[in-house]
Length: 150
Image 1: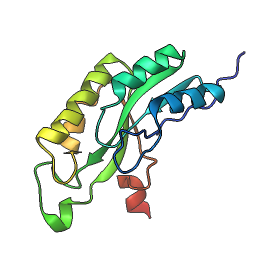
Image 2 (image 1 turned 90 degrees about the vertical axis):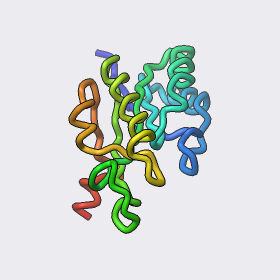
Image 3 (image 1 turned 90 degrees about the horizontal axis):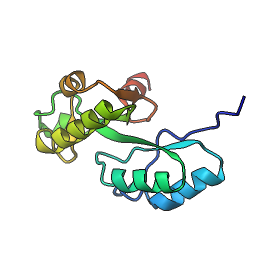
Image 4 (image 1 turned 45 degrees about the vertical axis):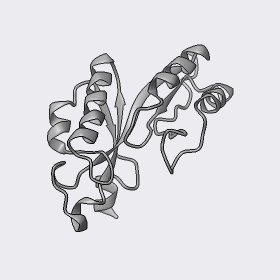
């Protein structure tokens, strides 16, 4: 049986403003060099690089996993109180199929249109509505679970 290999599921690129510096093609080439079968792109609050990432991954025969590290409002996305709502939690979401990809696009878009307060934020109400086809990772140190534990 062939070895499955390691896959990074939480990766930022140059499209994670002020947080990522890696160029997409460099990321994909490195993943191939390390014999990874797939790679996820999970930029902060946006999916600006998703199409370029998908195209480059196809070019290099690497399975692309489209995702986003969204900002989760501590209360509702409409709440905008400076002392409470300026520190959203982080939540990494991965699209596992086409409906998941569409739901991820919807969540990110609504984060900008309805929840923007310093950052594009979603809330648990939106997650309940647009959860199908998505996988959530709670491993980020700024995620709700790690913040509550630590």
